[in-house]
Length: 260
Length: 294
Image (cartoon, rainbow over all chains, first blue to last red; front, side, top):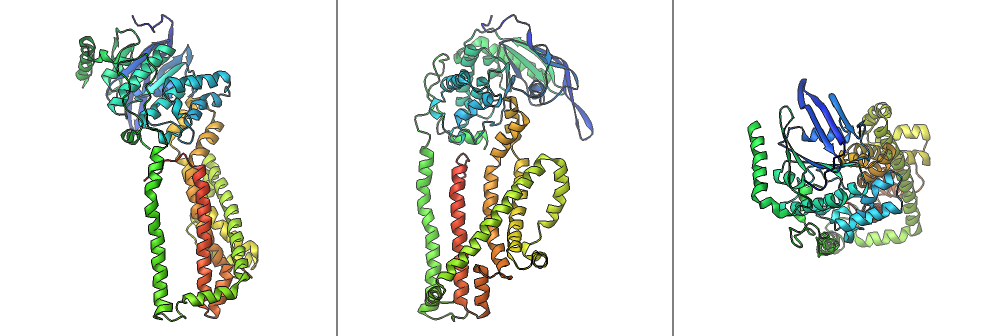
């Protein structure tokens, strides 16, 4: 139904992954045998209240955490330490303030020792695409929060990773800027078709951006329901106000409400 | 530097184009050039800088009124303008020689002490063994005023130059080792994680993130160390030096020549101010990227 979904084998897979933390002698189950397959080119949005384990899933895939049991794999291989094949856009401002916007975008290719003409072209391409061209030589301190987030997203795309993990990237920007950023991410998903995992607590954001919405519930962190979103890409922001969209939203809300 | 802060300032972000348009290129978020905020800021700062001149002028006037004009304070306790002018005349070239002697001692011990301190601080951050080995010593020695070490220094090095440089260096070392270590340890972890997910190996993470992020902290440490270095070197010159501002002040105080004492004091103040300004200008060029509070 959606133009970006392929029938390729699962690109990213969690199978029966559990994570236990020990806090002050007590063992807490942050993630309870979660299985999730993400197909190549697909955008999966994880939505749920804080403590539902959505960030834990991202940390597992990002390689910041290893599962207590179960497995996490990408293209059939177990996921290891953080690496350039899994880009992360953090909720916090992770744009390097000591580098200009352009230098931030160049960081990945330079770090991998692949800063060639092709990389230079990609940097220019994403500067243009994200409306950052006029600020290429500015330091991040001169940019607004929304603009910095664009730099962060562009930096991840320039590096051409296998998957992009976004951890509530727009959680700290105002609503107006957020809509702009969502629309830009939509445009990127059409032009690049990157496999993405998007974490949010904003239900409308999840439905607008996701091919599938994974609804999670807390204590212990579990997947409650997986909802297919029946819209083609690119999606217009206006669909958010349509009745079918709002029905989906109510359905997700109800699922979350049952658990609370 | 939180996102919320950035978003509320929003000089650049704003709605542009139709919000429903998903295919057009990004609307230009800004019509305001990026440097406008900076320009406004400096313009506002000018009148306030004049306040500093005003307070200096007030002290100078009060001095004149209390000494030359009314004679309220006896020259023995505080010299008048004319006494100071007289002393300057009398000193002539020696003042320049003494000032230069003190300055190079300060610069040398600052350079040695700070580079050693930065190196040790980085090493403590890199190696846990180095940290546990060195940290107790540093913590124990740090509260000791360098001046208190003078008897030992004289005993070991005599009254020569090496002892004075050692005292100056040691005080700078103590400041920089702690500043560097704390700064390196407190680098925002999100930058480290971001660098790793962009493909940087641990060595590159270190020099391209840690060593860049700590620069503003190092700069403030260097400024504090420079100021302390003046204090310690002048005090060290009280002991056995044959030249330098400290020596000048000590000699003059033996003969109760308060005018020369004051000249020496002012010379230290001016020299330290000059060095501070040079450091500040260089530092601002290096740390242009740092967001400054206003």
